[in-house]
Length: 142
Image 1 (tube, rainbow, N blue to C red):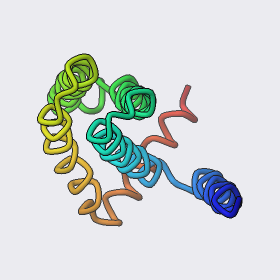
Image 2: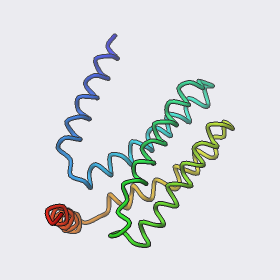
Image 3: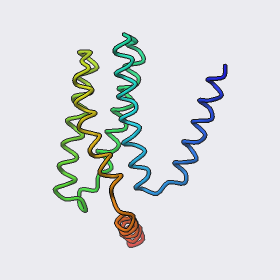
Image 4: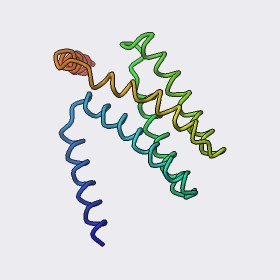
């Protein structure tokens, strides 16, 4: 019973965090959310909880698809193209892990996604603000 209250509290905090987050923070939250879901899927796979495993892998896939599909290919150039391909690869590996119950594939995706998340953490505040302002100006010009 108490767990329901805790989960409701967490969901409320996440909604508030999303509502107040800038684009950089939202991306960081998505990256961490995907990593969390993959970790949960690993635990479910180890416990042979196949319904939960499927749910967590599905959620991680959805997050990574969103990250892939929202890349700005015009601005990002080669980096965006490489990330697109990498996200595609991760989606394939997650699907393979699900079908074949292979923990090693989940670990591989974690090892690919973690440096991306860590890179986002290291972006200087000045660069974040500059990118946000450029994106805002681009939207106003349209």
